[in-house]
Length: 215
Image 1 (tube, rainbow, N blue to C red):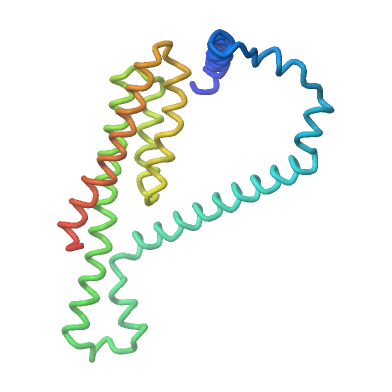
Image 2: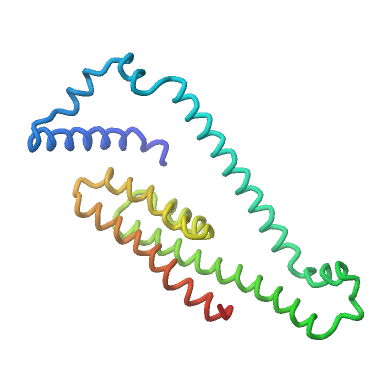
C-alpha cells in the first residue's frame, strides 16, 4: 500500500514545495524555484564535492549495517532470555558449583532476579502493545493513512529507550503534513500522536514499572 501511494505523496510534496516557494516569493520577494534553476551541475559540485558525497554515503551505509546487526543481536539475546527463563536458576547453580549447599538467601535472591526480569519484559510488552494500539487508533481517528503501520512501529520502537518513541513519531508527522491540505489539522494530528508517546514514556511506563518492580 505504501509503495503504491508513493506517486501520490510525491505529487503532494511538489505542491507543498511550490506553495512554500510562492509564499516566500510573495512576502520576501525571493523566488527559490528560479534561483534553484540557475545552479548548474558544476556549481553544485563546487559546493558539494563528489568525494565528500561518496564518503557520506559510505558512512551512512556503514551506520545502517551496524544498526541492523545490533538489532539482530538484540533480538537473538531477547529470544534466548525468553526461551531459557525457566532454567535460569539451574544454570546459575551450576555456574557456582553449589547447587546443594546454596544458602536460602542466595536462592531467594536468584529467584527474585529471575522473576523481576520476566515481570519487566511482560510489563514492557503490555505497555508497548497499549502504546502501539493507541498510536494507531489516533492515526485512524485523525484520518492518517496506514494507521496499522504506525501502530506496529509505535509498538516496536517503544522497546528502544528514550529515542524509540521520538523516532516512531517522525514518519507519521511528515506524512500528516504531506497528506492533509489543512495545515492546522496536520499539526493537530502530529501533536496528538506525539502526545501518546510522550505520556506513555514519561508517565504511564515509569509509574507502572516503578510500582510493580519497586524502582
